[in-house]
Image (cartoon, rainbow, N blue to C red; front, top):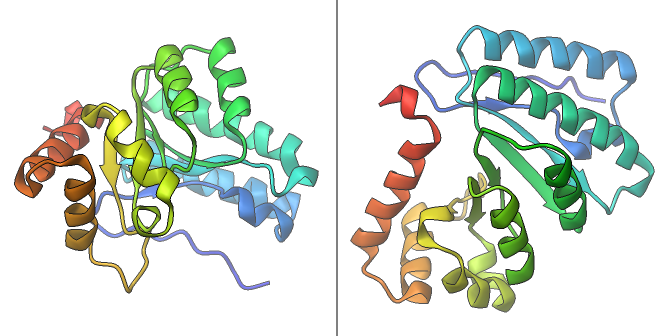
Amino acid sequence: MEEIRLEHTAGAYSSAGIHPWWLEEITPEEIAGLKVHVESLARAGRLWGIGETGFDRTYPEFIDLQKELFDWHLNLAESLNLPLVIHNVRSGSDFLEVLKKVKPTIPWIFHDFRGNQELVQALLKLHPACFFSFGLSLDNSPQVRELLPLIPMENIFLETDNQKHLDIHDIFLRAAETLKVDVEFLKAQIWHNFKKLRPDLQ
């Protein structure tokens, strides 16, 4: 297995975490080392947020470990008042279960969200500081295009997910078209949403 590197760029809005996909390849010793590394970066003030972390039901054999690691990420993020970046694949009920047990004080950002309106409403009812980010799915998922206008704009983000063929401006244009708003208004709204995540940086 190739060495996993967590890198930080000075001045960047960086996050770090142990992705659920990695669990198929890394050992318990490597997980322990990554936890130490992530926590040291976070406590040194070098991270904007924690994650990507979460649940992926396409890897059911690792779900218990995913839950254990999600709790670890959540506790770290809460202790340092940092936003949590979330990976969610076929696991909406898992997050609802967590939210029924804990009352987070930090924002949760669902990366590349593919859920439905019922899940959005349930998440926001339990934790109003949930945000839902969209990117490539605006092109390839009719369900996402139908869902986007049903989410409050103050809970929306847009992303490229490091897809080199995507331009964030194109994502904004597609989202603005779907939402039937001016693209400059949408940019201002997303920037306002972003600033709410870390008021301490303003």
